[in-house]
Length: 402
Image (cartoon, helix red, strand yellow):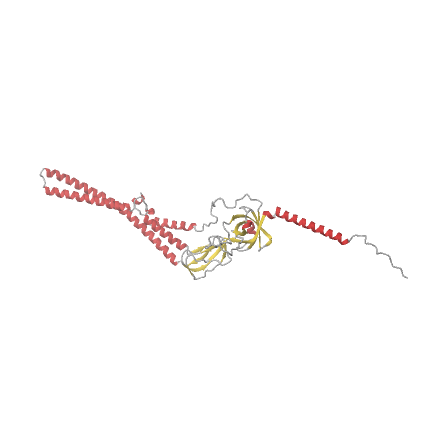
């Protein structure tokens, strides 16, 4: 008879190795979470909260439109798209014939006016001579009347002859009064003036200046140094004042317009440093700059719209607005790596220095942009006027020179 087997399997006296591995992995995970949290906290504390960035930023600059001030027919074009032009360089020429004829008419009118004014001064001198002569006639008539009056008292002459002497004296006095009145009238036209300051001459000189400007404006020049863009003018085209013919863009006068969310503007101040990266050069080229100004209104909303949106409706949805921030770009870096108007950029503002103002505190002390290419036009016209007056006043009367 077989006996029952009473042997029992040995108990597992060692722990499960997977349990220790699981604990180790949990510890590693916990350490990673803690380190990640610490890293996030450190990033926010030392960099994140001191920096604001946006990629809604674009290069902007002055686009100087070339527009005529007078009507004209285009006879030559001095530059095309992409050409470099210097300040004062000729861009477009109009047919000059009409303007030159107008200038010649104005010159002739000024010369004629100067000579007519010289005649007024001569008239004054002539009237003064007439007054002096008439005074002598009055004195003569007075003496004659006095003599005859004494003779008539003694009966040497008749009363009729005395009456004729009285009539001659009255006539001479009336003629003197008439001459003196004409002298006043003539003198009123030239009192306290010389030829060059006479109103008629000044009016003719103003007409000459206008004709000179019209003639000079038949040549369109570049007001700034830059590159030509948007040329639309063609040879033979008849253009009207205000028509855009081309544009000149000075690529050394560029800035960045960065559109930040309104929630990013709390710590932004004028003068804070900015780091700029462009899509054109990528991360290999970085520009430095500073905040020039913070916009006075939301650029993406309806703050400046002709008809602002009315949000008092049931389906209104709040949209985070963006405000344009103008960033000045370092000129030396811009010269080394030129940019173009309209290029996309990414800007990063360092918020550590918050001592600057949020808005400008003083008005500009001088013009932001200026040109002096037009200053010489009136100077040349004034020289022409001076020469014309001199040439037509060589024999001016002594009255005009007093």
